[in-house]
Image 1 (cartoon, rainbow, N blue to C red):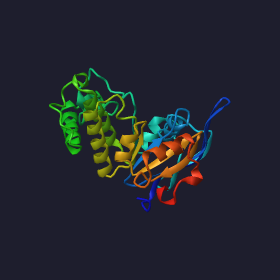
Image 2: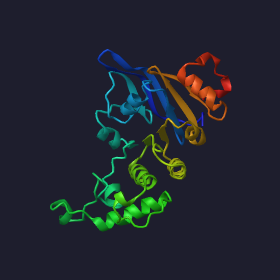
Image 3: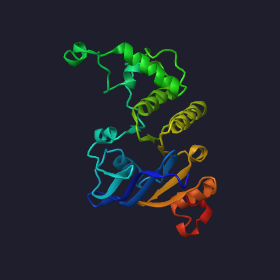
Image 4: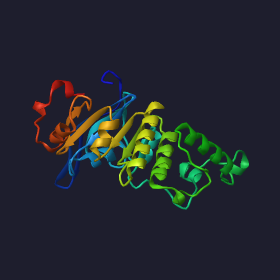
Length: 262
């Protein structure tokens, strides 16, 4: 994985909120075909970093590159245009709408010809067919794409949000605490779903407080501390307790074994 090309890069990212420096010259690299976990204590700046990467926040300083080309996101729509999709912790699903309608929310398929161009009529049949295909690709077993999202369990709703991001992402999927508030069975289901997204060729940025989940699924771990990147770790070569020690500052960065650096 360390030799895989960097496809999404941020350098020297700074973000200030008044006198508070949330990001203090952060560097970030996402490699092709990996799941990169981002961890950090409260106030470490990981949420601000993710907001910058997803276009929700414009940094005060620094630069970003996607596939080696400079990018400047002024909004989440800009990031989406560049093929970066984000699954937020609150999911942003519409409970009363169907699975298919949620999958294409804001990107509805219009009927061909004059009905679509002039009258803006939605092609619900095509959306239903495409939704079924997307769900099948990720092996998400749901009874019908026509059922309302409010009838689904928490894990199934998360599945819909993940499937929506995977369906439209061209470069990167960002997931913010995707297993939060889920039980063990549903949490494991979502982890398997994340693996499938990665296996489809989409690298994943995973923000999580759940260290067992991070160690189960991440290829590398970006440790955020005091507004900076403290380290990038190989979860196969460092213990969970030592990773937490790096995150909290109990283990100085210089003490990290060379084989644990990623």
